[in-house]
Image 1 (cartoon, protein in one colour):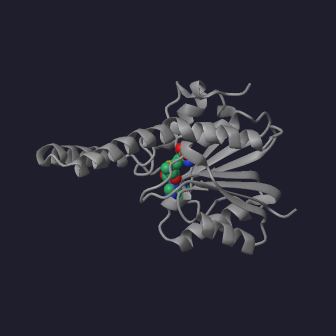
Image 2: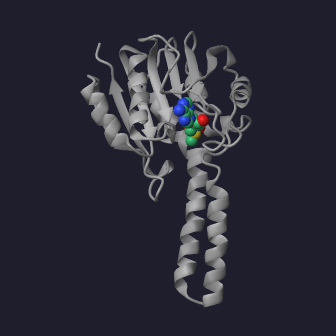
Image 3: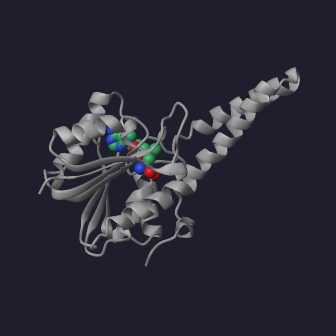
Length: 241
Ligand SMILES: C[S@@+](CC[C@H](N)C(=O)[O-])C[C@H]1O[C@@H](n2cnc3c(N)ncnc32)[C@H](O)[C@@H]1O
């Protein structure tokens, strides 16, 4: 069965970067008050931009990413017996979407469960979501830092990651996470990383360590773009067979 966005109603996936909302609302109030008090258009234009940003952000985190990743996972044409790893799985938005395409395969989510990066983030919430989605028999959750994955080399057929690697401080450590993703991929395995920053550096690294079919592209208006947070781009690659 192909899941639709409404299938996600019962499970609860929170919001990414929850600090964005209080900050944006504060900015909205300040610019509105400044606009009304000064009777000048500048602050009111700022308020309109902030309001639009809040709406856009809500759309990307509550709906857009589910639609985009559903298409990306469909595009993998999985057989159902794959072993899939989600780096920084959070409450399971991508992990559980992938798990629904599996029959005998397994989807493993790795995370450090940062509540700064996603609201209500915890292994318990992710496990509850897997039960609500009816895929708990195919899902395993592991608490680990993605720069030091507790798996042997060549364990997974597919590695995915959605807006998670940029949360690691420093490009050097982010590239360690990319190296780890490649290490645990089996030859011929596929890698999909969507991220807000450093995606050009991921491409350079992947090419330099022998990954093939390395590509980068934008993910359009359904994922976050613009402003100081960066623009979501997808990096895909395959491990040489
Ligand atoms: C913005 S959330 C996205 C979660 C999920 N991929 C999604 O799309 O809903 C980023 C996730 O990366 C995780 N994370 C950040 N740094 C990490 C690290 N070094 N190792 C593992 N997970 C990490 C956070 O705990 C959080 O769950």
